[in-house]
Picture 1 (spheres, rainbow, N blue to C red):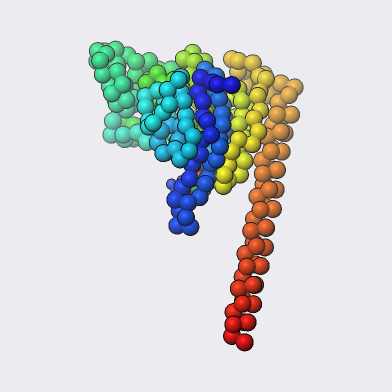
Picture 2: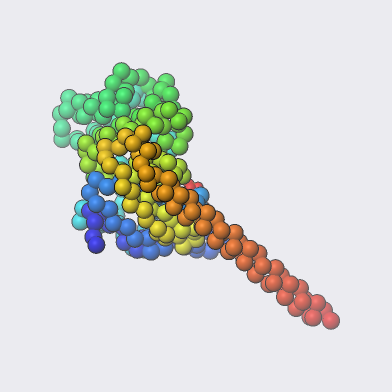
Length: 287
Ligand SMILES: Nc1ncnc2c1ncn2[C@@H]1O[C@H](COP(=O)(O)OP(=O)(O)OP(=O)(O)O)[C@@H](O)[C@H]1O
């Protein structure tokens, strides 16, 4: 099956001081237009590596990414990215921070239209009253709202979120999750989100892609969630299958933990045997 967005046999090898290490291998995933997919997996398995390759910010070693029929070969305005911290220009206003990208992508539109577009998205994320505040004077939650408005204002086909709510308090986090879902549904943007938070993945996603442990991480299992949209948090939490899906995700992660402990123990045993045989060879050569 081919999707609106296709990640095919995506792979990444990093050069390290110990030589090349294959972090992600044969990562296959198809997304429908407007679909919301979360990537879940243990720390260091390669989630951000997949996301930054799709964003075009991290060179792809093998395979590729096709978005709406076009293979990507670097970053582009068809993909908006929101990281944990929004990296705003601190001395510029909220509006000017959003205008930076808008001016580049919509250079042929009138200044008034560009300001309208940026203001529209800042309004949607609840910053209508703070357009002219400098980024350095905004709270962390407000800065993240600017980051989200900045990504949406480019009208991307795809949104890539790397733990976008990771640094926020739980109330702001819940509020922003809901605002984000509202805009995504309105604009039909296809989304991939990296998260460590099982409940966040359950509330936000159509599907949860669980990655195996690295190195050579790939898609381990995919859960399709049955919760209706628009999502209402209380209804999702009350859904009879909620704790079953939650349990499946926890089981998968525990299974990966178990495999990691096993492979770490095997590696230690192998190293011990190698060290022992080297010692024996040394003793034999002295004798
Ligand atoms: N530029 C790099 N060079 C070498 N190794 C790297 C580089 N970037 C990441 N890695 C390694 O690749 C692995 C995967 O990293 P990545 O950040 O993609 O994982 P992650 O699943 O997003 O982790 P986390 O959940 O902790 O954010 C890690 O072992 C990391 O140390």
